[in-house]
Length: 396
Image (tube, rainbow, N blue to C red):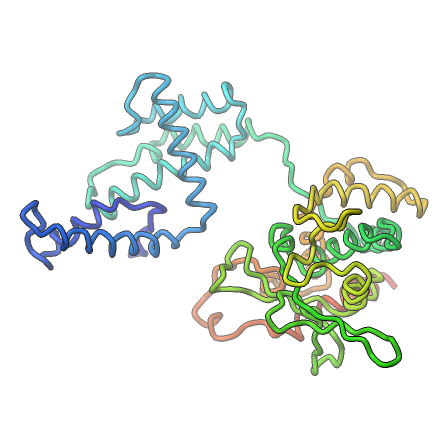
């Protein structure tokens, strides 16, 4: 048998009752001491917290939103939301499609909240005879029809070619100004580090600047800084080490590292030099976010709409380079475009899914043997540094 599903939310009273059902502590009736019950409830709430982490925080929030929507719909019709019936589920979906103009994928996510309720009742409360109406044949058919005919136009961000990236880095930002250097560096992190914008905006930079006798200055990165410029002995060159603790599949106690080569010739990028130059000229506050937005009055920790900044850079790059402006591409550009682009380039170069997933922090279902190894840093750096070369050879 497979592992029982782990509900995103649990009932403290149900978990407390497990003690009585298991016969471990005997009577938990009102005659039990108040102190004993209070202590058990505290421990159980801790158990609830740990078990709830079996699902992502975003999933738990999605389920909570789905339950709220179900309760609101039932209240409008003066009906009890539970137990669910196939008719109520389908009418709930129609209400979302027509009354709220929701996308079919949003409604499917809300169905997940109802699934979670029934999985909880069956696996944790022992109500095995409780039928899940979401598995009713008519509801399943309804879901397929809804997905095929009522899916809104995708807003997914598009990847770009290596040539477009090269043009953007060369002409998209006026790096003579602080704002330009900031925009280009952040776009480089999103692309070559395959970071999500939320994770990039949370990166903390800690450093000091040392001045030599001849007046030259050097950036010294603190070992606790999320971003450091380090030396890779295998490749014999510098690279940017990024300590990511705000992203999917990571937490403050389960971080991952992203790596950016000091130089990537295919797109004319020199991230190592750009990072040092940005710190020396702009001086973002040490101990604060690296990508705090520079303004005339200092730094704004709210980085603004990164997608708009990327769109402007593409439009400017086309104007300055004489490249034809692609309106469709412009509208589909966003913060995720950089991440998707490098993944596509690496795939075009013939790299396996495991290397791409490890470089970008994607979760892959793995066999037992996969737990025994991970993709080495120099492998990721080598793949990114040489991106596009295999494609270039095939084109000759």
